[in-house]
Image (tube, rainbow, N blue to C red; front, side, top):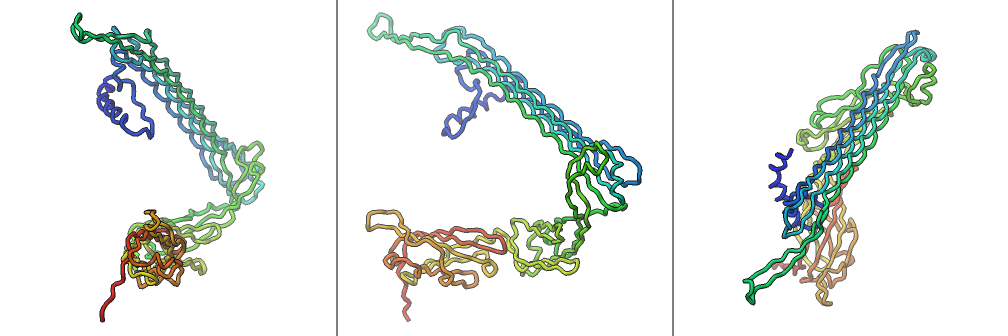
Amino acid sequence: MYKGLRRKLPLLLTFCLFTSLLPASGSVFCPAVADERYEDYGRNGNNGTHGQQGRNGRDGESKTVVINGSPINLDLSGAPGEDGEDGEHGYRSSCRQPERNSNRDITAPHGGNGGNGGRGGNGGNGGNITVYYTNLADLQKIFVRANPGDSGRGGRGGRGVAGCRCRRRSWEIETCTGTPGSPDYKCTKKRYRCYNGRDGRDGNDASDGKRGNLGILSIVNSQQNLPEETPSITLPISELASKQLNLSKHKWNLRQGAASLLAPGSIIADEYREFEQRLETAFELVWRERQPITSFGNQAVKVSLNDSKQVEVNFPEDVWVEGSSSSEADLTKFTINHAILKKDVARLAVSEFADAGENLNLKIVDLAAKSDVIETQFRVKFRVKDNISGFLDYQTQYEGDIPAELITRDYNRFILALGKLKIGRENLRPGVNVDIEVVATRSLGERSVKQTINWQGAIRKPIKIEK
């Protein structure tokens, strides 16, 4: 262990020296070996190791039975979690005393910290049981113990060890310069101190694990096992347009009083599930977006069937879509009219700041060329630099939404008629320095994002074109 410490010591010293120069925005613990004051005074005690966490208990076995009139006795109990290990006690420091008075302050070695206890393991869950029956009263012949496993106890923390104590708390050393007997001979005394080593901290006691859950009863009024269900399918979006998906789901009703259905003394969760019906439907994606579906690559889409026999389509965050759903018989179609990658939603930029007065306008271009699909709203903060009053900062002259009638869209270019906002004319003349912040809200379907665009400069005098 100490060989490994010696190998890491130069790097540790360098790290601690570097961190000592950083601003005090956090705390960095550097061991005592990083300070030269410990060189002549032994060695710090090592910290005790932390206790291992206890393993979780095994879940009870789940069973499916078909009642045939014979009594059934099942033990589906979960196993208990293991106890966590105790943390080790800290190790004593080497308290060698210095052989002579040192010409520097000394701190005695610190005691080792105790290790933390290991968390107790969680108890295993009781196993679940599914019963197929034709006569509900026959469930009284089934005795079930689906006990949860007990939690493991948390380990105790190890004890910290006391640091070394100084035998001499202070001393003086005299330093002389010059030649004895001559006028330049002078002696000065300086007092040095020894500081006791820090006591090691006790380790923390760990928490117990969690007790497992009781097993759950499910009942089906049938002698035939339910077929496998496919309640959801996840596929790359590029594969959805070329196939029809078949979804199926078992719908269950939740009831109370499971133990009263079984043999007396049975132990199981009170809430049980009763099979109601099997739901089935097909799903088809209709692609009407002008971009080919293959341009969206391997973006995964999840299609799910819920208990209301409705199909839910969840697209990833990186793909925005606008579409509609329709159902006919046992087929659900989802038509995508528009789709766009999220990275292309907020790519607006200022293209031109032109004219002055009531004709002042700001032109913004959509670099992704998607503005025929995306809904866009603008909010502006118009500020003017106040040079007359002696203040050189910007003063807000207008802040609010830009009315739709003051916004012109020409394909992927927006013209914002700032000169027609309620801004004093003196703030719109050439030479006025302005700071403009535009917040664009871009929306498609149920998703939206805000983009902030800034422009700063002087209003320029309009250029007259001679005819």
